[in-house]
Length: 271
Image (cartoon, rainbow, N blue to C red; front, side, top):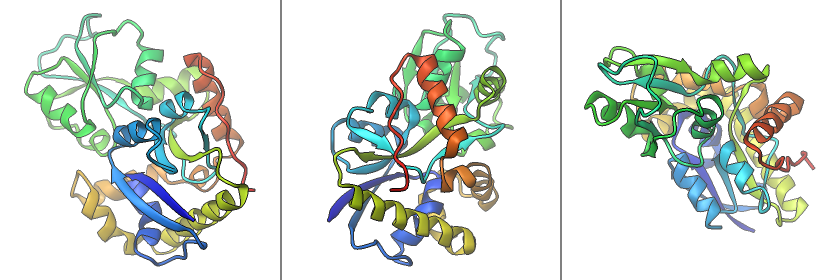
């Protein structure tokens, strides 16, 4: 069965998918065809019905819950880390309510966290995640919410940390930050979903057993070329909840739904 599978170019995704992309693990009898894109682009493609399976922001998962469910494998939860609200050079702190804030996409969890935690900041605009820091440095916006590798590389660029939205979320909810996960069409047969979960789980296990073999694929798609940054990203976001979302991951996702006023998403079991 042919499935169009989307994954983001961030290191934790290319790490997980590298063995599948490189043909080092079997596809469990499925014809998996891969699309790599920015996570907001993937969110939009899912909304358009263009993908069967894809990494997505959990913010998008809440909106798309009638058509897509969350797979138990492939999630990214933040423990002590998450999106950062950064201010440009010379911007006063605390940020004034009319501050112009750049976010990495309307459906991203980063944008949803900003709305939940900083509702007074209503002047929000969107651009690709890798354009936010250059825009702040150029004075084109007052502040921005940074994700992916930029979360680790912003220091030394003349910017100021206003708030770690991930830390604020954990402090106020007692839950890790539910950043993103793998969504799957709800109308796919359970046997297809079982094979898909098996292929993804084997890919993750293979990547963790031989991580250096994944580095060329990670480098090929990374926005930051430092291997140290790539591994830092993987170490923080690829954990036991990536292998299995588990009860705590489901609770964090339920809390995000509750605080945003969205229905609870369907989370598939391993079938």
